[in-house]
Image (cartoon, rainbow, N blue to C red; front, side, top):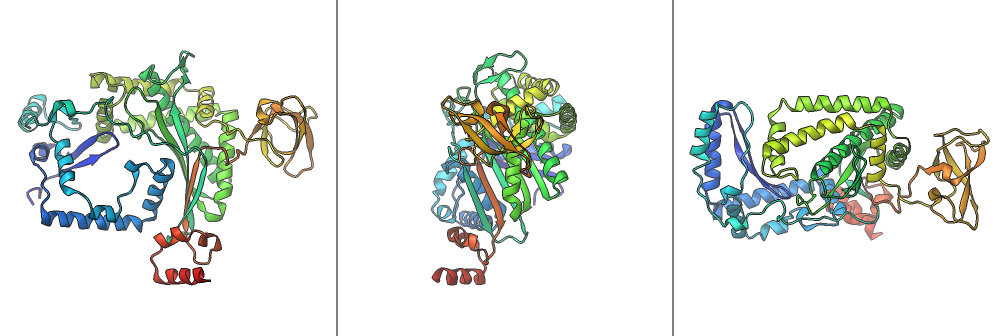
Length: 498
């Protein structure tokens, strides 16, 4: 009620992987009110009041129940479970756990987080008042927050506990059937990323993880650009050429990677698409094939030029928003680039973006794609789709043609690198209609359809549940946990009794 008529967003507290954040927004004329609210949030101790706790507990339970009925939330938590091997930090909070929470301990943790003001970094951006007025406000509301807590208990970038979630070593393909109305499926393909040993594209020297945080940051930025290139390539192939895909996105994330300098940068690349349910296997295979094709042929000059223009335009547009500078400044304070001077860390970050955009070319993008999404080591077998690296001697096929393996020629000597099977020296390839065939050396082909049994990948599909789908009845455990319609549950029980 006291904030009526004020354009102030009440400060909210958020616990991330490695930091605690307090965020708030206001109009320029209400900056003093926002700072007052932040001051009160830091000096006020939270106590486990009975009536208030019951209200909070009920809201948490309702939120948990709503998540169970939300297909997107179900897929989100299941994806976290599969890609991190059920890491405790990334588990959903269940209703039974909420009812047994130790609220005194929770209040103690919160009060401890908000106690040591010296461990906080304050970032302000936007239409700020003159420096003398701003300094007076900060002194009055932020500088007056009492110092409490043990300074030695404050965690730093290198002492905070590393979560270290582990990506599964074997591929996982899972289908989540839920009671959604849409007759489409949302599928995510997740593959691990790790910036460890890599070649510096500017000097050509091989670097180790942590040997240069500046080069490591450039590598992370380049990974993002390659993901954007791959998204454009997949979009053109699947939507504009096939016309059966509703949307597709390719994104990278390193948020769970430990901030300490002694750890490699780890993350994941996620390819998400929406299409008809019957098309999921075919679209997934086409995505794997396009990745393999780009690993071999790279991207065109026009692709690179277009991507550079997009990156520069997005950067210039983002610089005009408060959100960009707020996240850039706060992230710089906790990044590996930070060495005591935030201004220097931000300048280095922006310079790295410019260098990456100016310096990346097709060869560099192709090399990074091959490094971050390596081949899976599949044995060649009849029926496999392969890409020809050179024209065949008989002239039946040209370089870059997509053909199928019809037969393999065995020999006592070890075969070429691409065969993955000692003794294979030649491959009989044929056209799609089977009318043209020709033997080629195994070194002249590159695999295009990776074997799912050896790739480190998680593929999860969110689809509509149907009571007449025999395939889904094998997953009665998943269905019982998600279906709430009485008739559907009764039908399921009847089916199980049979």
